Length: 472
Image (cartoon, rainbow, N blue to C red; front, side):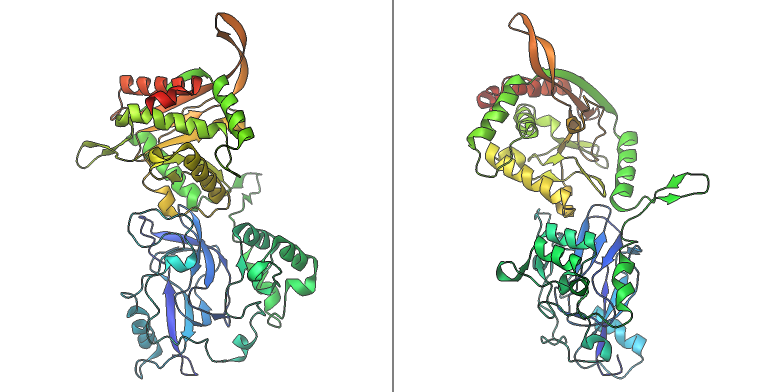
């Protein structure tokens, strides 16, 4: 209990429900003395699967941050202490009183990371922070903002909306983070109080706007202090070597790829395909806008559609291996994974039940998946449960490769660069648009015949897109 009669609550690193045991604190958005409200984001953390923002589940004043930015913390470990309004349970030593105050509400309200949601197994894309919490706050927490207390919280930061998190879209938040701008100190000019990119740039250009009424002396070093450790930087050595810490997504990817390579017997097959008709169809769909306004059409979209068409003809390839039961599990739905390179490493989010979607719906889902991955906001639920994956190495100008299976899946397709090459077409050598496809599969589940037939049918759809209508 604090000297002014408030009780201390500690917020623990949440259990993400995805088999992960730790997370790295990337950035703190608050400091001791700041007032926080239920649902306010207090920090950004990176797990082995994604970077997410973490909301506090109660209202009060920050007493202490138990770990600095850059620290890796086990799930279940307290990371922040908050003084909340309300009577303390009973006269007792401070250490003993803090524990029950923290432990009792947990059965009623389970803290989860933004985007994770409860463990229902269902996928939720980019859930808002208020959706990630469970029941209402426990009774001991006063619904109103805490009473003005010590001098420190009296003027923590002059925010646009006192006690609330400023409204801004993810790209604007990233811009502010890159420029070192505290969004709480930015005056919004957008509709309904939304902070725009112009607002952030204006704050960055004016020193007075960049730090609005900060805490007197400590404020200047406090905000920038978190930034340098938010990203793992290369560490040069005397000999000129550079050591790069392997954390978060990169560490998980390395472990998963080693496990996959040495657990599943990989086989890779290749085929060159004349995709001239497919490329013409891509241009036609772009020009006509048939799939809807603002819908992005790309060759990858039609490769995904061709793969889904081939899966319908060969459902056994959409499978996984159950080691304990020594069984092959043929999946009922195709959760199509798309490998995406992000600043934090390679991730493979997937489109749930992609096989049931129309081409237009698939295009929208693919666009959302890519945009969310670029922003670093992919939820772990979107990266679990995948059944088959596409990796587009062609965007780097690479013809093909031997992709490693995403753990738990039976097959992965590498889509290479599309190049104009001499090709025999209707008895003549003419320039045609050609690509190379590479299919790696788990030979425990997929034998050579199944893998070959699947790849041949996929290639046939790309060579003759109208074939998909016949097989659908």
